[in-house]
Image (cartoon, rainbow, N blue to C red):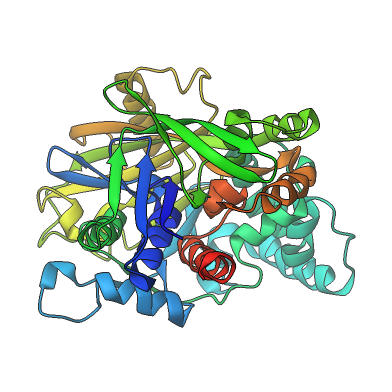
Length: 451
């Protein structure tokens, strides 16, 4: 194995590239990234000395192998302070009818005072009933009803989840529930880089380059040429418009499966192209919004005001889905100490009315909805705002998802092509799972190709 091409410089692609270079010094690695910045969905965007993530990316401490891997780049202890990760407590809330309820739900006095004794009793009874009498699980609604009961599901989950996926949970596979961690260890704390999630991937990228790897930005792969069961070559368009053809012993793809099959030339059955084209995704818009908040001091939000890292908005009349309080992730994301810096997540479809709003119009909606849910009061000064588009943010378990296995089986039959990562697998991996998926794939590659 002399040359490997990695398509995509997100967490999966960068992990795979680093792992290959870390295991051998006789292999050339070329990483092709369509965008002009590495990090993929886990990149951190710089805007006027503010930093914003594309959603809240927590570095969970649930897998020792992944944790050790992260510590190679940004240790929790060390001499260089800025390269040490923060240890943060997971403080999540759920907005419901004027109240900010603990998430996960705690049946304590505060919860009873917020929603009432009758609702609390219904929640408990529904939860008990769900443990005694299970539904057959076919849909995502079945999944949640079996784990939380009818009242908790309909009161605290259904509206948010339907906002998230853009359709009834009855239309989504029950496998979607694994995204939310049925078999995962729930931890009280998580790690987070001081300069945002993207800091980790910048460090990984630098190590790749030091080991001789090449990362080319603005490189759009538009053709993968198959010959029987081998990928013979790929072509991509450079940032200057020039088309380049490359051959490799191994190609690792993190591009969406729909794009992969659309760009394949050769003996690809029409039925598989149809399945790939039928895969669904959920897009979103992230609005970074900075509000002047004189009460803040020392670069951190006071516990009395905003202790949460993330707030989920359970209200069908509100477009806003999630609020990330950047101050509580890292004060280094915020420009000034007396400012509240928020990441506001709106789910939508690429090209729809919300997607096509001007940045100013989107900001007005964001401010209006924050006022409606009582998060901010009138009169607060908006310092600045910045919008980021996130197409294909979440692969959905709808459309032709049930036939996804046929696509992966076809890819498995191509001796030198491997698909990894969230979109490459069409599976909602969390970041630690993405790293592990890439590591395991590299293990497989060395077992099959290294002589």
